[in-house]
Length: 495
Image 1 (cartoon, rainbow, N blue to C red):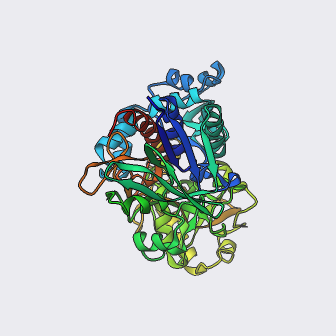
Image 2: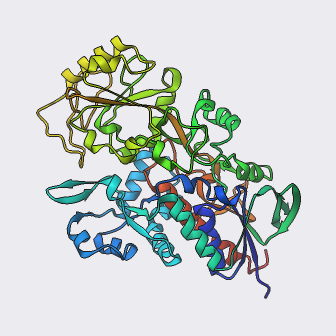
Image 3: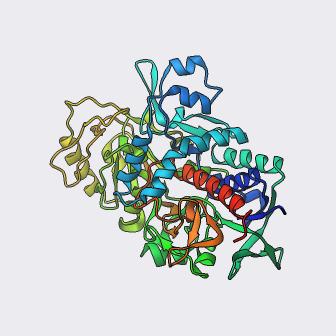
């Protein structure tokens, strides 16, 4: 029996998990990456490396993180995050539109997949810096997000690439796949352009893991709508929808939230595409402890609607809808110690002032009178009788405002005040290809397309409107692994 050949398009998290899984089942694997080696890794390289995973307690976490010491375990309340919790969060934030079968697989396979990744050499650690606060001398995690990759997204790319090298998987850089080769037997290979030369590569199966279409300005405007051409791209410039197009061109079924995306509050003066030197440092995610105002000086979202894990991916859209596509985040001294590390980087648009009146004159693009009137109304509306607690949804709210804040509402009255200007940063798009439980791409008649698989951001049907923080990488790993296994196993039998 001859060795079967699997081609993986892309070299990020989903792609490399697919490649490793296919190799584990005995396939010869070729990875084709559009970027050059210095810009490899797709969007994965730009993430902080958080991975949402279901676990029953600290013992499960210690299996994933064997370096976790007894002191760490004793001094930390990790709680639990069951499959029921994960599924409930996924369903709730997607407004119950997530595909139940794919969502169930994502949740159920989250822990086994991370355990498998650990065996591949990926090192995990607790997210102390971003997901835990100290309460009565112990760290307490919140929001169901506990695990991150050591070294963040770049670390994940490095671990998986090393594993691929170790397993004899060939990775070619600067190799842009431009089309799928197909016939009556299904997919039989790809056409690739590399160094100005176009060639065909034969394969028994092709796995598309080439990301979303967020770096394609024309597609963003076509599918997401007006003003999306003005959004910043948080990650790689290479995710332009190549995988979507080549599959749709031969009859693949589109599905999911094509007008939706993951978009966050992002440094106003960040470059057009992500900067690997800064990574995700341009994000500004401590807004639940302050307020956001637009050019009129008015608040426009409930900053405390939920833990930031469950709101940050949809609030970028709300910022883009504001006049001139920006907002300012405002904090006072009661909460500045809670601000995440990204607020302390050099590449930040920040102003400070001893009084609100002085701050009003420094907020570029903002009506100062409107801002001061808004702050006066906001401060008067805060329920100061309820205790502030950043670890739980504390119910410390406002009342009587056009947009009330439902948790973590503090008066803004202790200077000096700090303000940070943000715009919309798009992470990835939600619309994509339709797959079944084996990660096979389906055609418009809902039949599997022989030899074609997909994983990661170009799969549709899982995320709608929003997503629970950390579930994007887990999604890519889970379905990448499934695609790798099934493509190698199925290829052993004649189609």
